[in-house]
Length: 120
Image 1 (cartoon, helix red, strand yellow):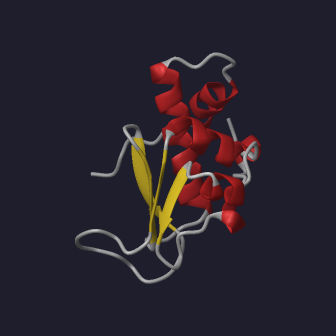
Image 2 (tube, one colour):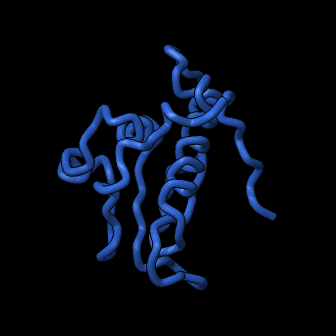
């Protein structure tokens, strides 16, 4: 069963919240992952933001078993900053805030996300 879809109005409110508690942070992370999965459809790269969520995205060879060959992992604050365009991808990877393994584990072309244009 696919994860429950977060309505745009709920996701936008979580992203725009000035002071995010754990629940609001979780909603913001999951919604931004959802936006990424919708804007970069595919199953080539797995993006993990523990403990809040993970998605597969980016067109290319499909991964079905075991550890994916292309994995990106980061914390919630870094993911939100990347998704909103507050932190450049290269800076996040260079500083170690993002772990990216595999030839296709690069989100440069997909960030920042088009979150402000999502319908409420």
